[in-house]
Length: 348
Ligand SMILES: [Zn+2]
Ligand SMILES: [Zn+2]
Image 1 (cartoon, rainbow, N blue to C red):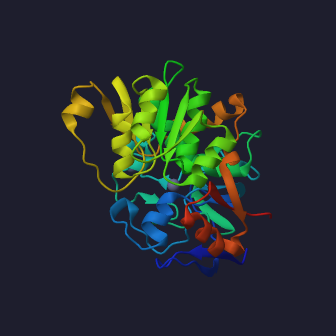
Image 2 (cartoon, rainbow, N blue to C red; image 1 turned 90 degrees about the vertical axis):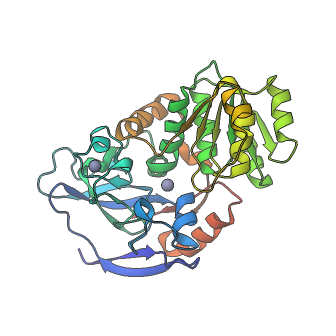
């Protein structure tokens, strides 16, 4: 099939284009023509600016992009489900398939040294083609676009899992700290799950504005010294469920401060640290605090079905689309952190 264009990230806030052979699917693998490949906060945090990741987040100089969605164009021997022409979302980690986490569907937590994340330790979606393990592909419902699928492959899946841990329902008022793409996803899904009102905070005025425009929050609140008081006033003492999607220490504390007695709080935003008064914010309020990392194959597949029934399109939060040739500009825009989701799209 010849060669293809792909993008690698040298780690100095630049993008490098490389030409590599189009891979041939081996046993249990499929070759996908990429249709959409979005940029994630973790690509920026741990790869683009500087190669900071270790272990599961180590970047091995491969083709970047861990939020791929595409169409099967070739099927390797031993594949049992997919056929040419199938539209698929790629769960972005290939696991060993036999450890406890893998058998539970949480390939993200695979404990085998063979675990490899697309765009981190094996080639990802920022290229014309992607070699994927059949068992990491989930069929994309016809009603959803390829961009919808790319957004589910990481961000929406991650937001959904956090909300599942919180058991969010119509009984809950929900606060989301951090209105980047994952926060917007959490807001959109929390409302679909019946919760409300939905409150969101961010330090960036552009992100507050976007959340308001999209109508995914009822209150978009500037994350300043007065935020906790504003939230307490709007809710009569806090929300039943809170979720931090920022990874920022102050935002995590705000989420805990704004959790009602007997409420639940989840930390989804990655990195950094947090320091808080444990007795005051956690123990004496009887608060349950969850950590939540990505999602399972099963929950991702469920979410795709729910989105169809809810009539929701994740691509609504995409503010910027670029062809692969303009990946450098796409990363600059994503790194500025002022807008919504940035996605590479392919027309072929
Ligand atoms: Zn991601
Ligand atoms: Zn495993």
